[in-house]
Amino acid sequence: MSVRIDETDKKILAALQTDASRSLDEIAKEVGSSKTPVWNRIRKMREAGVIGQQTVVLDAEALGFEACFFVLIRTSEHEADWQAKFLKALQDRAEVQEAHRLAGDIDYILKVRVENARAYDRFYQALISEVRVHNVTALLSMEQIKSTTMLPL
Image (cartoon, rainbow, N blue to C red; front, top):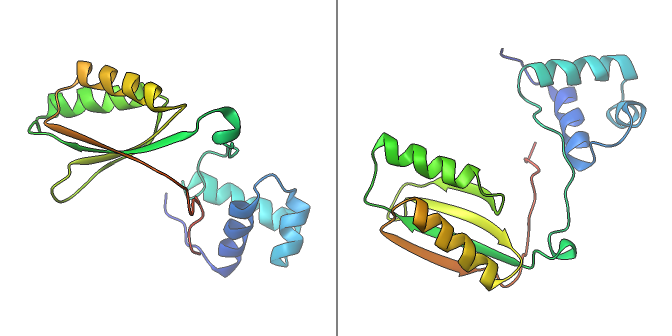
């Protein structure tokens, strides 16, 4: 389903990105509309796939996940079977917050959040026991400078 996004929709999306837990009344007031039209627009954007899963953002460090690694993976395997096995290995591991297939010298980059270096090593050992990779480089983030899920509407 395709949906056309106008300026009011963008205002609604921006409000939701900022804090999706706010009431429809609050969002409607912010975007200069009333509750029912805002609800109808949100429903249409959900149905069209513009608005996906709603969740909460947790503080990783407060929960003991103090280490964030960016893992660069090079492989000489590019067959569909290997890719399916690799994808399953990533999906089965909650430590993997993001995974991207790249253009260039590096084939994949993962964002892995764990408690510490030992936990990363357990993750790494488990991953390479399941799928064959040519080279793995792990980069420890020393400080998170910016993190957002908000799109620039």
